[in-house]
Length: 552
Image 1 (cartoon, rainbow, N blue to C red):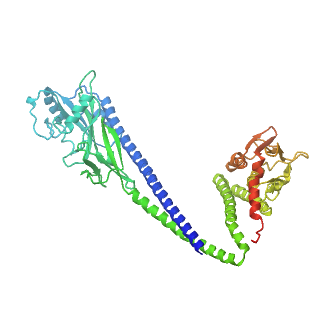
Image 2: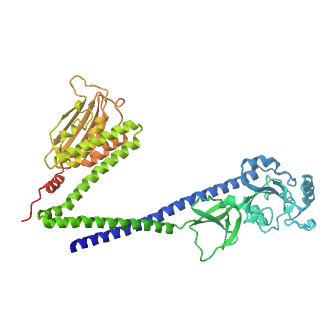
Image 3: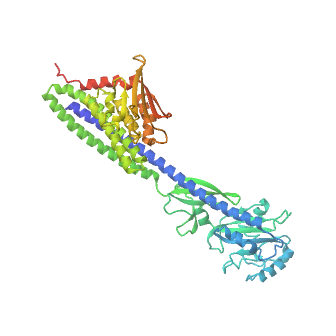
């Protein structure tokens, strides 16, 4: 009883260790999978944001390239571009023409604005304060036209943006670089308007070194960069380019607000950089759920299941072992039987697992690639019947091997009456018998059922021979179907091809090939006799099947 207690304690210890190992592996796997899924979702989102930004920058480039400015003073310069601008179907808030006007052109510009019907044609500063035109000695950037024209936007033309804290530097940078430039985040339309960005593309007249003006587009920041699915794995924020300690985040209604980055706050899971308007924008991604907490929960469940199974196994083992120990005290011969029982069970489990693995492979392959349910069912029944037949033969011989000719019995092989077999009546091992039984069934089930024998010659011929010395003997098997061709023979299934070309040769440690001749289909298998017979397996089976002798 003491020994039994130690054994159960040892099993319990092993079970606890295995449960802990399984929980650890599951924990690490969950963290890895969550990390991969999060990274993939973030990469997709960043790629979509970059595509949106590239599309809008392309709109600005195309618009500036199509722009013709013979007279920058006009107030309807966007009229020829309206169809091109709206063809892109982008969600811009305002598309504007900002002309770069000399002081002597400002009076004419006011007249053009008045003629275009804008309510305030006076050239003024960006904040609607009067602009002293006489004091100007260099060109100023004045908005002369915009799209769309709404009651909220038509008050903007006539404003000069040179002194604007955000638009002014953006226009100066675009003029210096000669390419589209994006602004810092700013409120659009009004002081408390939606937060967005502006993109200015310089327009050059033929042969000019300085731009005649700028085509600008403004976009809301939320739909442009921070749009996200409610069901996604993460939330996204934009690092404020004006202050590295602030982040811009959109709420459920798309309203952008700024929040400070707390030193003790959670760090972003990942940061991705996108390019827009000649500058880099950093998107920070925060996971919505804690991958570590979820992994811990899953690991705890796995550990609990493992411990429960350990308790069940220990209880069952203790019950079985106690009864075996009690019976061993009554019958002396039980002592030897119990010592070999574990080995027999292991061997039986090994063989049963092999058979179940083969059956599982048969069922999976047959049903996975079977386009016709009835045909798949017949193939599945036939294959399992072939396995059943070989197991019956092995059981009758106490797993000492099977005569090769016995595998061609009519109860397991289709069209067995049409197969002429020849070769030495050798006994093959259990492993070889299982592979060969499935091999013979697969070959026979795909033969031409509609063709009859020619004269007295058989339609199918199966022969084998053994060549070489005993230690180096080679087993050769040849299957030949006459009066068939590649066009008439039913194609082998995916399972059949795997069995013929890989499974059967590998099980016997040999090689196989199949081909068509002018009048037949041939399959050949070559393997060492030591793997076909496998004396080690036979010796092990004989040892287990030997009668139990009582101790003296």
